[in-house]
Image 1 (cartoon, helix red, strand yellow):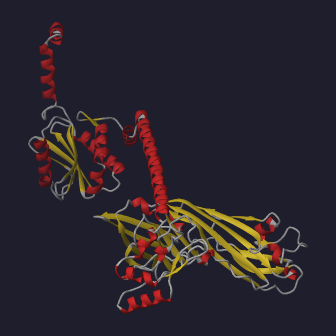
Image 2 (image 1 turned 90 degrees about the vertical axis):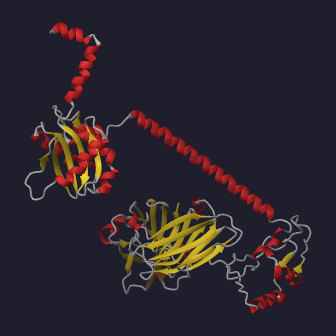
Length: 561
């Protein structure tokens, strides 16, 4: 027998013998346990199926298609047999986890395998429905391969299967790092090219504004006939400016755009640039005649300065306490927050010297993320224990009048940083989409209920345009700044009546990155710290002096990038 086997090993007959034996061993009548592991819906739709023997697709599809017809209701067991195979299954919500085995398999071992598979499936698909299973199909197949090998169950646990499937590759990590470095390098090159293109456009625009170029913006048709009505004033340097006989470059701010289309804000021409074109009384008459004929003429409006940047009125009360917070936020265009920083100050301004010997009682809010710091001259222990702001030397008065400066004396500072997006008072969503030769831009704001925002201005950068964008819908007002190529969306007040709003405008086709970064300005009368001054305590005794409190939250740097 040994001699026969040795001869078979050294001959082609041995290879043929091994092949035939393997085919017989792996057939349905052999000792192979599991033929296939599948996940099917209750209607019979196959979501995932892994075969562990050589089977044709037609056969496995036929076996799985027959399963829903053979499943009975009201039975106590979860397996049944046909003439050739055995089905062992387990319901998982609206699906079935199914093992197809031969009839010679050990039913107890099949149930153990099925139980292990039922623990693995939720580890990779958190939602046990068709969408979740199909989304993680390959992960499930890899996990099945770790549990069943050549039809037999491996001696593994759930933790080991996850470890085997998630084993990291050093070569894969290195490849990903190389690819990411190439992507970053490409982005840097793209930014440099974009910056060079922008600079060349700016230089080209500066060159085009010399000479008689701006005269083209005065329009044609009826407007050409009005040149005789324009008054031309010649200054002492009429022909000495060196740029097209000194014609002002701001002629294009003349309100020639009609049909209800807003124009760019008018800017005053600089003095001493030679020949200038201005609007005389005859020009006004000409505009009036156009209005009489039904034309809509929109006069240019000077841009409004943000009220948050305006200087505060001078104090009139004996003591003025100002609470101010400056907000710096950087939001990502696809969602999320990359920077959130709040810096606040409490300042004191006293008009008369007799009110200088005081202490200030304050009440802080419940925001635990805020870190307070007192001025070095303040009694830190007194503030920590009693929330009272007073000097270390009680006999020393606070600076009064002009000594304290226009902004007063700083008593307290605080800061808050966070990565919680729910703390953001105003979020902006911008959705540019191209259609044909146009780009449609939809912008939406959503304000939290923490603050009522005032004088909200959302500035959207635009590509270089020949005319103002077409605004189809807006909640609020808008203004186009042609000089800086910005579209400003203004909302006077955002409260509970308009916590969300939208705007849609159309421009010629442009890249989506041309509309970023979006800058936002607003102010509020509430703060994150909720710091309140409750009382002023005179150190000399007597009645507490009168005081006023000013509280505001303003934006310092609020961007969507």
